[in-house]
Length: 315
Image 1 (spheres, helix red, strand yellow):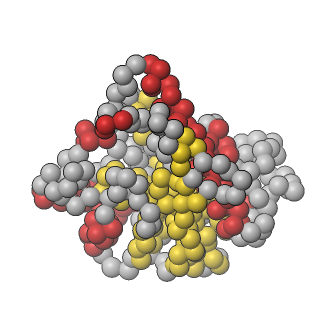
Image 2 (spheres, one colour; image 1 turned 120 degrees about the horizontal axis):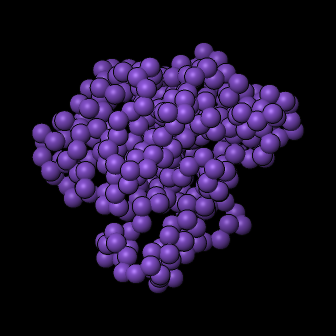
Image 3 (tube, one colour; image 1 turned 180 degrees about the horizontal axis):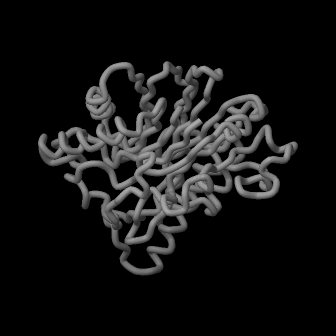
């Protein structure tokens, strides 16, 4: 069984302010995405940047029958949201944006505006598998690509850049904390016996503080001496599968020429010890060739495919 996550990069139908300008560009994008999903052959795939649920339906129709679809009802200001497509049946457990109790609202701009919920909804589903229920939470945390008042993507000065970088980091930190709270609900204190997967575009790398928030108690990450030793924290931990990805493939986006792994799969104790393989791109094909992106998300409006590579694990 292969499980994966993929940021589809602005999946809108044509004609709107963010989607492809014409039908031909839209059909080329869908064809490129469908070819990758078909070759990836996932049992369940979490997706991000679904601009319109109808566009995701268009994509799934190219894949053939037998797929179940769900999308979050909580898009961001651009209309993008997370979703799940699966060839095994599932039910939606949660579709939420709330911060956990005791976490205060965070400042998001120079005007002092605060928010007390995530910018995009977290979608949780439970799928039936041959090994029992699999609980999956899909997220797309606040981006490191900064935007400024009046639609600007460039700051007026370095002070503004620093402030808006802090606002974005604070928001991503709060969202990671909210996602961890949802993971706690799915684990229900029983990660040793319950299969739970938290995955998506976390918009930061393995050692980033925001990513580390999601793991739980430290001390038994993959590749450490404590990995195969039983521990009282095992019921609550999540393990990032990144160390299992071959080093030359350990990136999911290229930002200003730099390779970054910002899309992640985090597994509960029972699930992580069933992993057989992990990777990015397509199995057996090595590192995926990706375009280098910059600060303007509209620059690739008519591009086919995605600027992210799928990230996956095989059980």
